[in-house]
Image 1 (cartoon, rainbow, N blue to C red):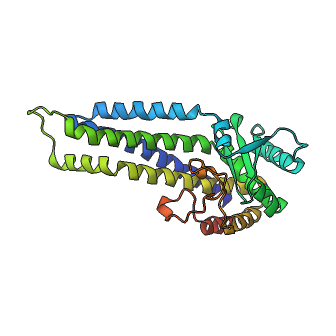
Image 2 (cartoon, one colour; image 1 turned 180 degrees about the vertical axis):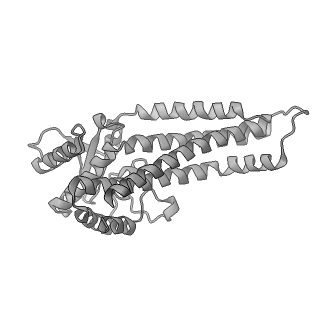
Image 3 (tube, one colour; image 1 turned 180 degrees about the horizontal axis):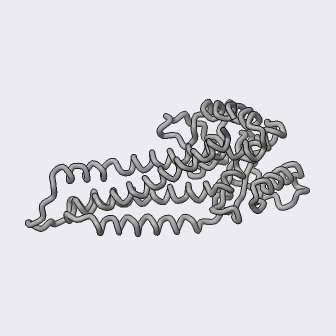
Length: 291
């Protein structure tokens, strides 16, 4: 059951990301079809913008994210022996280099991971997490974050954000070019295709955000399953999730930009499921309880 769920989540992610890339290329094609009547150059433009944004965002430093959340690094095991050894043991079980460890002075329990590869991985926990949860629950949350690093989820999330940005640029560019383009009199666009292209450009930013959120939610399920694999204790993770989501106080140090990285929504916003970066806690708990 556990390994089937892990494989299922991985397959879903591949399909969603592939669909996202095709969607971005379609938006680029719609842009030039509306303005010039052809679509190849638009697809090329979309690929260039999407690729450029992805590269720019992937080279962003982990330290930037940690500074945004006012996290302080633990540089030796003497600073917090339990936290240090727990992360160290989980990294060994996951067969990745030991991530850097950071602590956020905040009473609301939560945690997140960052780093575009296992070599640059880092985990951060709030003081609230360390004070409110027991040892097994803390281990479960940390296993979830280590799983994010092992599964390259942060890199995937970064690529998704880059694609959303690229789609937004293409949509904005399309809306501007429609008013200034000069089409040749010999050009004939099919009315139905033209209508679809217009709708695609108008709805593109919203659709791209929904796709990004779908990727994020699926990777949370994958990290939960992977954490259960590492600890052999899905019930402790489910218990930690209950405690963390029952706290109404948001993480004051959390930035809205980094909110999707957290174990559970740090801003405590009750968004509709389609517009949520995290799956519903009840569904996560149900899946963990059935492992």
